[in-house]
Structure formats: structure tokens, C-alpha cells
Length: 398
Image (spheres, helix red, strand yellow):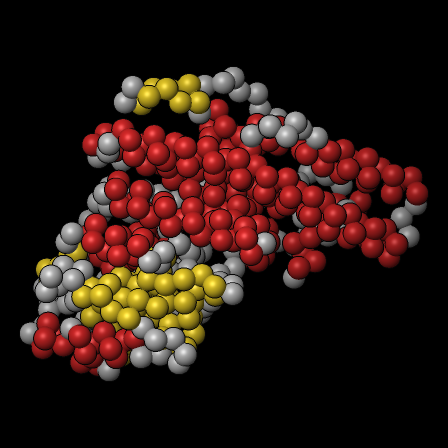
């Protein structure tokens, strides 16, 4: 399968990553400040990926970060209420993300081109392609590569994206809340993902390695890292919230953890102040949650809640809650405890349909969703780990 990836042109491989990274929608019922606090974690995770050498994941996360805070969040109805200082803080973060993403893009193109050339040479040998055809391939794809990377070191990722898409765009400035900002780089980066296409190229296929279906490339480029869950997390959570469960009231908690040795590890559960009913729970004073997580450099990895008298599944409201986590952190999970049925479910939105569908759904509260194709599924990337000790922070009594 890796050969299928390598047989895709370097520019197309990069566009796959851009398309994945830009797939995020802002939900109006989630406050802008919650997005800003989540953005700090996104940036931190991206830099951790860089340190680990996982440049593809870093590039996708940075692309998501820039798309979210440059293009999508300013359209939120409550964006105007955000302090100017917070907007300026994230403007700097966006510029830093652009600089880092440009460097990563250059490194990825170097790597992709090397892999691509090896595959071309192998097929030329296997098919005994004539020297003239071999030269033609080198000229065509070598020149394409040189055009992408032969730029000044100060060139932004946006300018690279414009060159990829053969667009010319003048420097654009805009004023938001009396702040003047240069937007051309961000606009171009967004353009790169919007112009991505799964259509097959129009070149002569007989002169290139055979490329597998685009969906295969996309799937391999978007694999999830494993999430390690303490084996007794649900049992301990149910014990702490038993008083609510006994009177048929839902309780929820937020899952926090670390990224270490290529796996996410859930180590903490924050139980915030909240109100609940038989089929819902609403968190309060969410700043406490972020303060707790940020002070310990924890990443939000999803949530857990009870269904005191129902089976384990994701309701329409649960689906939207899960989207708020999974759209920002692809590995985020939902744990649903149904003690009356002795069920513990570990769920995620389906990435080929559910994530996109819920992202576009504008309904709030309980409302009907189609059942086919499925909007959620059992997690395939979790492991119950007996070596992790989970800690709880219960703010309900504070």
C-alpha cells in the first residue's frame, strides 16, 4: 500500500494532506473562547509531531489550525465579543504556524520527490523503457518539482500554494476590529485545500507508475494514532457518579492525557460543574476545565458520560458533542457507560461520513439524523491499558 502512496505525484500527495487538514467546521453553539483554548492544544500537538519527525501529521494539524482561526472562526456570530488582545495573540500564532508549515512543506516535497523518483526508476527498469522516454519523465516531473521548491527561503506557504495552483494574487489586507493584518498567505493556504481534487490526472498513464484509487491514498495519509485508555477508567467513573445514576441523571467528564512514544495516553478525567437530566448533561464554568488541563500540559482526548437507563450509543446531541472534540483532535473518543445494561461503549464519528455530516448539520438539541450510512462506530484505535493509573478531578462539589 505504501507503494501506492509513493506512486502519486509529490504535489498531489501534499494536496491530500491539505484537504484532510482543512476539513473543519465551526459550530455556533460552541463559544469562540472554547475554540481558542483548544487551539493552544492543537498548536502544542503539532509541534510535538515535528519533534517526533511525524511531519505529515504536523502539516495536517497546522493546516487545520490555520483554516480554523483564519477562515472559519471569524464567521462565528460571537466572534466580535472576543477581546482584541486574544485575536492579536492568535494572529501571531497563525503567522508562526505558517512559517513552520512552509518549512514542513519543503521537507515533505523533498521526501516525496525522492520516493517518487525511486519508483519511476524501478518501473523504467521493469518495463525496459527507452532512454528517450526516461529523459522525458525526468524532464516532466523533475521540472514540476523544481518549480515547487525553487523559491526564496522567505517564501510563505501561501505563496507556495499559489505557485502550485498557478494563481496570482496581490497582497490583501483586511481590517477586523481596527487591526490591520496581512492575509495573502492564509488565503492562499486555504485556496490550496479548496482546489484539491480526487480526479485522476490527464497525463499519459503509460509513462507513469500506475496510481491506485485516490481514496486509498487518502486513507493511508489519515491513519489515527492509538489511544491508550486505563482499563478501570469507566469503573472508577461510575463509582464517582453513582449518586446521579441512582436517580436517573446523566453525568459527564472530560478525558485528558499526553502524547508520548507515538501513542496518546488518557491519564486524567475532569468532572466539571454541571446540570443533568435523564438524557442530557450540560457543563458549567468550562474555564475550570481548561485551566486544569493547561496547567498540567494535558491534551483533551474526548469525553465520557453515563446513560443511566438507556443502552450505550451516541444520541443526536452526543454526536454534536463528539464533533466538537473529534474535529479538532481526530483521535478523540466518546465513552458511554450504560450501567443498567452493563455496557461500556467506545465510539467515534465515522470519518468517511459522520464527521462531515455532523459538521454541516445546523440543528441543535435532540433531532433526527439518518441511520444509514452510520454516523458513528466502535473505536478501532483504542487499547485498554493496565499500566496507566487514572486520576480524577471532580469540580462538582467545589
